[in-house]
Image (tube, rainbow, N blue to C red):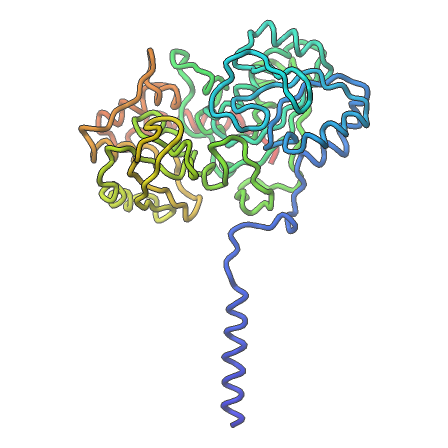
Length: 414
């Protein structure tokens, strides 16, 4: 009887211990060892701006997540909010389309909201001269084609050799483990989603990009203060930081969307939907003509060392390509983030072209192919058309990546 009781107790103890080993997908914010730049800004930086005039560029991924706190904090320190800068998706981060007018009136702050992609450079320069500080606080994803870096560049260009000070609240993004990757933008393909002078994957935070651009391109002609994230060590994955994900745009509502974006954004250069206007943007992708997605999924199984897998899905986008049509396609399921996102994008499009030769098309605007504007030049597209392996394609620009890695090193904060 004693032996039986002992064995039963031991089994119960083992099962109880096993029950406490549930895998933890991310660190809870209450357990985070980091301090975000927003908290430091309100505590240490904002009080030093008392009595001054301010221009603010933010959205709900930054201090814009709490407009009431902005209003009360500015009133407390007698800071005048003169202007708001409208980023691509608007102040609340809800807009799918660019604003059609250069300036609108924001109802929350009762201040003019200037849409930076619509106003002229000279007008922007006049606006920044009217204020003492420009505060820039938005979450980016570490990619040149995510347009918030273009906004930052335009603001800094306008502030060159003025007395206006730039304060940038830094953010940790989903590509922090990646070095600079890809190629620079060919001026022939220059567009709003490619103005910042970096490789496609920048290898920098927005704060680091500020320091880099100010020194390398503006000769330190802008007075800059970058507020870093305290306690972060480079290489920590976003999920390990305990920082909550705050949606920077309608199409990156969750961390998985942002991670997948690193690869799937290049699908915007071909005739498929990337799930814009669905419950899973940059998780779903497909088209009405993708009639046998299982075949494509099977080919993709050989890639990525099991860091991800693809499963069939049906969806109906309410925005973008194939709007209102039933699409069959695939869902990207992330297992681990330790994969090469550019190699995935290249092989995915290459295999899509191979599997659907009669339906696949490169999307084109009035003058350029969209994928050329994303990648920066025609190499990505022409290499796939020529049937080159990713290794052969990468050999054409690998030295540029190494050069860029050395160039940005002095400006890294973590």
